[in-house]
Amino acid sequence: MPKTRIVYIENKSASLNGPARIGRVTFSKTGKSISYGGRTFRSLKGSGFKANYFDTDTGEKFWISGPRKDGKDRLYPESSLPVEVDSDVAEEYWREIRGRPFE
Image 1 (cartoon, rainbow, N blue to C red):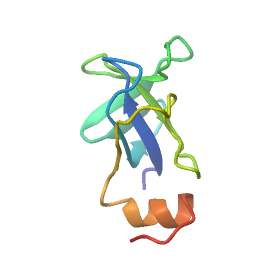
Image 2: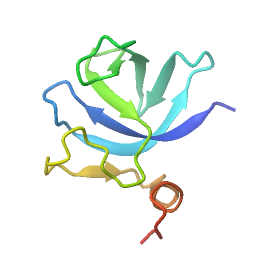
Image 3: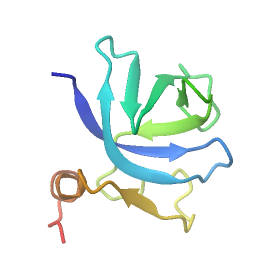
Image 4: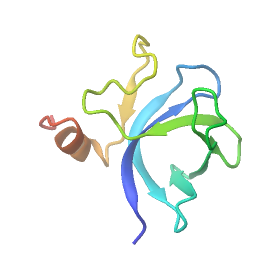
């Protein structure tokens, strides 16, 4: 069974504050790529600016990391852009990561 993990995913291709969400990624067998929402991402291996992964089809840059317990995942938390939480991980995210009941 492939390894999965709930992560924070932010699209950095247009600006430093892009669309963001919490969702479950699936790791490839080799661990060199991750998949989410029909997209495949590979590491920038430290060469990105405020991004650590890129979409292998489009080249768009993303920040993908483990979500924070305090919910302050954005690099620039003063951004008013919302962070969406996928419905299939919402309960687990709030209970296991944020330590709060799912409402």
